[in-house]
Length: 247
Length: 236
Image 1: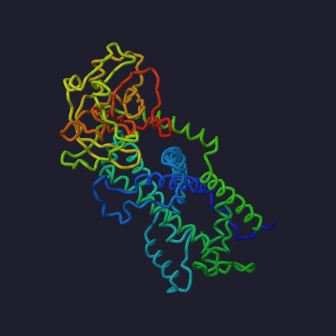
Image 2 (image 1 turned 30 degrees about the horizontal axis):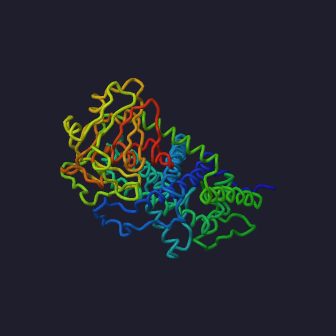
Image 3 (image 1 turned 120 degrees about the vertical axis):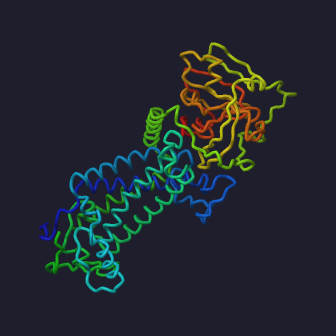
């Protein structure tokens, strides 16, 4: 198989490994967390109310949970948390040491670029804005994810050890609020992950290859295809890349 | 390209079905072993970071749960100590101690009394506040004088054969009480009368209600819920 000249090595193996470990760890953590939540699906203390949650007292459908029962879900949650944290530290350490934090940390002009991406997706703008490895919307999502992850880990520690780590629990406003923050941050992270998966299949399925093998065909990038969700999803089979993006 | 895609699909399918299988079936034996290993490692981490000077931060103005404090027991009906049937209630302190004790409620009330407004953390996820009055376990231990063998403490009661064993450090935390009062009154039957263990340093299920026996031991002794798969340590 001859290699297309537009094929580039894009995703480092550390990124690929930590990405897929994350998929497993987050699915298990979220599923078992929801099972734990279902044992008392409310944020109010007994006899009190909690107006911030309109679904107070309503359990999550069991099919979305993991671990079968409260004790089982707790065992999975408190085991998988170590994999999640170790994996996150490996990812963040690599990002820092390898300079790849530049791919996700926002810089000046990203807000303007994000606005242009939204205009493009809404058909206000005709041509795909010029981008580097990720577009500005992607960058903000990938930047927000580890921040949400850190909030989830810290609020999780605050719930796990409200006496031994009571200082941390107090920082969140106490046990009840730490539990709420843990839940809300998890929900936001899952929403971002869902949008992320949707966009992979609707805009750039070719990026799946780079997240598995590391190789990416720049002739098929969303910018080269002028791709919106479900528009220009399939790249032309042949022909030179009209405008391969510059990395 | 198609090779890559096929290989990718294969890997994805394997990963996803593995996760789904784990979700649908009983834990495979290897997973159960890993989870047990994680529980043991977590316990050593938890015991390593445990401190006797970390306190519960319930504000003095905080509302107590009062009548909304959940009432629970494992018997079919609420356990009530009937002196006509069972005789005078006594708390026996025994095992690896130099001075075994047998205390009536009056004896218990003559020991130094502590009153504290603290949290009760249930394994289910709720927390409820109450003002508990009673004797510190550490004060009781001072009277009973545990020997060097005493590494664990078992708390047993008359709610069927309910008991839970603790590590010595958690039992000796200043917030750990043998409580006989709640919110300024004698403890009521729904909350474990005549006396119960209460401490915010352990989850609710470790806090044995309807207490009758405290046994200092060289080894742990499991517990009612711990034996059914909840973590034995259950620390907060």
